[in-house]
Length: 284
Image (cartoon, rainbow, N blue to C red; front, side):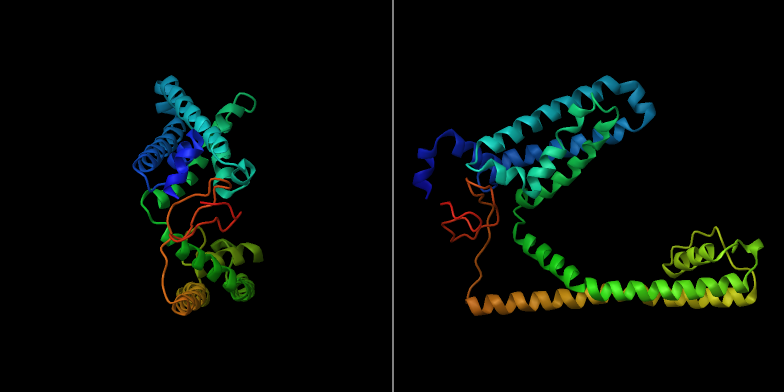
């Protein structure tokens, strides 16, 4: 495999630097990219502070353009260095990359749209590759599957909480007076949800003994309610982990996942012993 790379020429070299993090140049590129993303997000934050923007507007604007040009060149290089650029364009990172590049350009058409450059913060997800934490993407996938498997239970739970909030809110409207802030049933339900979630803004508070008693009960119930969704997801996550363990045991061995990207479709997360891309079948 290593002997084939020189035959592919400069495109393969660019691909290796931009898409992979297992080579010295690939690591350096990702670190530089990581730093520029952080600087870009900081620039957007500073620009939103009127005092700083008034004094350093030209400098901030110039730095934003320098970084934007770098990201533009990087995006073009990503398209040129793979055989199927449309795969990258429509991928998660491809969409994030273009969305984080174009705001400054369209700001000449739609004033103020450059604040959307904060989207570049999503590019920090590439830190998984930089720090060689690709294996943890599997854990993220387990969490996603656990949340997906829990959605029916959580939906039923939230619906039950909503019903309880309506009942208790109506009760508080009957018990409390308008002087306390409970001027309508919707306002009372709002107070119930705020109290039930232990947020407690304090803009409305019961003043009667009966209302304070109900509020105390709602506060205590709120602590228990917060733990329920967490418990549901934890159980499902445990099931996902158990299934993964059983699958690995049946396979008889664990194969490390590296940062090698497919030169055709840019798919990542290949096993160390893989010779072909799991997505498009191209030779790695």
